[in-house]
Length: 72
Image 1 (cartoon, rainbow, N blue to C red):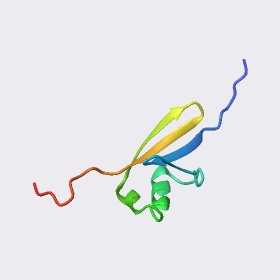
Image 2 (image 1 turned 90 degrees about the horizontal axis):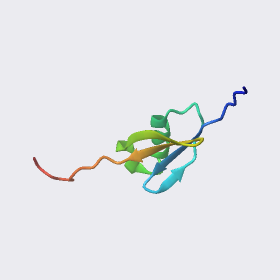
Image 3 (image 1 turned 180 degrees about the vertical axis):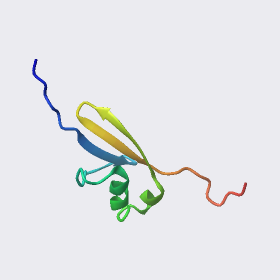
Image 4 (image 1 turned 60 degrees about the vertical axis):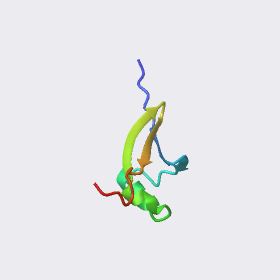
């Protein structure tokens, strides 16, 4: 019986956009921080995942929901 090793491909997404993986040395939080320079709304986003489908592991950046200016 042969054992095969598959490489998992990391993918990151936000609001329908897909982001390239900068490398395995970056944690998902570091990837979010890297892309927050181009997309400032990512600075407060949470990282959900991974969701694995085949050989692709996808992390989603999710913005925190809240009512702006609402008083409790």
